[in-house]
Image (cartoon, rainbow over all chains, first blue to last red; front, side):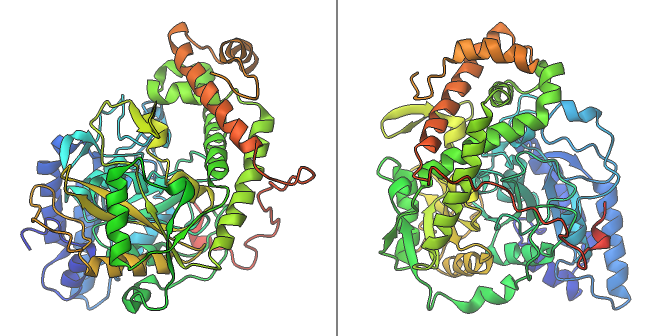
Length: 472
Length: 77
């Protein structure tokens, strides 16, 4: 391991647990990587060197005493800066929140990861108040794509995608309201899991749209996602939307293979005639899975539109006091949308909620005929920073909302979705594909992602890309 | 930009900025109007969904006793 650069969480945990190297050595290496590699990417907004070094020392003491710190022993991780971190104000990508009282405690999912041996090393940048798919931020600067720093990282979990893609840290946490884990995972060439709505408690995180907010892990392989996901599961009454359901063992499910699974490619709304880069990516995955069937998710256009309105209204209601008193302090790209959302008629919102429920029910029913649905994660590879339009069916559309064109309906339906990376040979940039399962079946998403990895779909190292790296 | 809801973004913005008490600078208005028009198009799509016109199922499930007996005190922030 060349100083652990691009090492996976599982490799690190195995090495620390067996005494091949210490947690202290791991943390020192990654703090060096962050110092060297972060400046061109602008992924981190805070590096917690002192805390991380102390925690690593504690883990090494535990190991010396014969204790087992857990399946994530010594794994450095970082979180989108909407997660509460003890003694830091929770920025949520904004300038306004810098004046907030520092958090008194870590977010629940940080605590759950650390209870399993992981080590928090920092906070990561994001689009202001998570209303973003680009990774651009007027206050803190744009977060760059590790494959080409003049291109977007994707957002709003921009730092989370860029940091894993660039090898700054093996594991990050992000949030996903309409695609904010899956879009940066696609653009940065990594794996990302958006679990079922209600699976992971959001306690201690700054909200965006309560009806649609999810949290989840981003990493360089499916095993790391599964390790982190299993460590974070468990009901908590501290999030009113958290569902009291049995936990699943997704690590154990990884090696079950593809046998017995019914696959279908998403059609209709998800058709890709206009999106050659996304079409090539989905073709590769479907070939690897021997998937020739197609399926439509009825009501998707309506469901996606409902999610747009719900997000706009709920996010704007959250920020209404600040829109009234200090609208000039918002990022211009989010301010105009929040202002519009604060003005929408109540009947539009009520109808959107009704349609969201209707769509989620219809989408859930589709899984009586299929186990896994394959769909594009993004319409294209990462666009250059500053790009404002995206061509959809021959019409120039605003880029920002439409980068989530294929992810937004899936979170509206609350379905679990794992992004698997592919490489678009023409552009030389990565683009992801969504592996979608029925509610509460994250194990199936991760199991299929794992099988795809064994067929050559991997998180490649930017700048060291082997020729013909995808073997299908 | 046309929409079935007959929203006139400029006129609507003028009315609602005072109703909601949001001071909207002149240079922001074109952007806000674009987003209002986008939202109106989304509202048209949502309105056209094939739902029973005598139903209104939209409540988040509210369980007054949720978590009792299963409350996790370690989670309290």
